[in-house]
Image 1 (cartoon, rainbow, N blue to C red):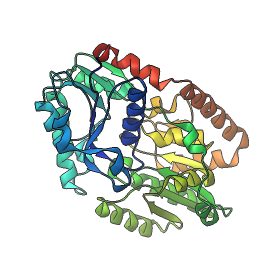
Image 2: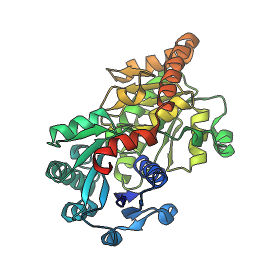
Image 3: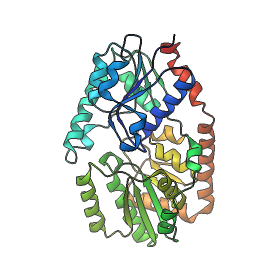
Image 4: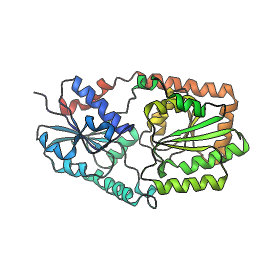
Length: 356
């Protein structure tokens, strides 16, 4: 008889990479004949029909249960599963160093600090640990986990080919150059560096340009306020903070983008890089964390992100069709490589040591 294989998350959120991966894992587990429910401490209202509350986990917990625990931050879910009798598989999505959040979100800084401590504490408790990048797997190994492997996030590419929002097109497909970033507006993403680079680019290379910052700002209002002050100080025009957007809006932002720029300093994976490559948007990204892995050889990697150098490179990509096409060719090869990944087969292979 197959054991139940529930998943445990700190939060099941709308448009979130970890949440989307949990749903994909659930789909493949159920197709393979396993009973698999998702339990989460916090659930977005749009996702309420897809998860059960954390306190109901005791209904499935047992020594035969194999729990897939998504490790991303210190939480009540981690404390629950640490003491539960279940066999444990930890899926590690990286924990942002707390220092990025000090001064902007003290509570989250505390959660990240405790999450890093819990990461080491979970090593002897975990039967199998999976990182969604080699960068994350190496962190698990350094923390003392005896059995580790990589289970990458694999995008559902057909989903991104659905009809985009016509509203976004009418607003921003107007002939201006659109520089795009997608991701939460949080300090480790270095949105301040994006704004400084854009201000330099707009002033010296392309006055008719716009910076589209697509991502949730909730919880980081203090950081957002600091960014808005920076925009005003630099005199940049056309910096747009969209907040969290629906999927059809997201697809439309990729459609109107002329370049995707990422200057983040800490990434355990970074799904938007692959989304941009799939959309045919030239990607320029700072070489940090798992970014090179996520790009699979596509796009342009930066080892220096000084505003004047990045702005000049942006201008070259915009003004040199041959260079732009070479970048797009590397991205097309990367996307094709990602497309060939059979996530169901890969998941079965990674879980074989515990599920048989």
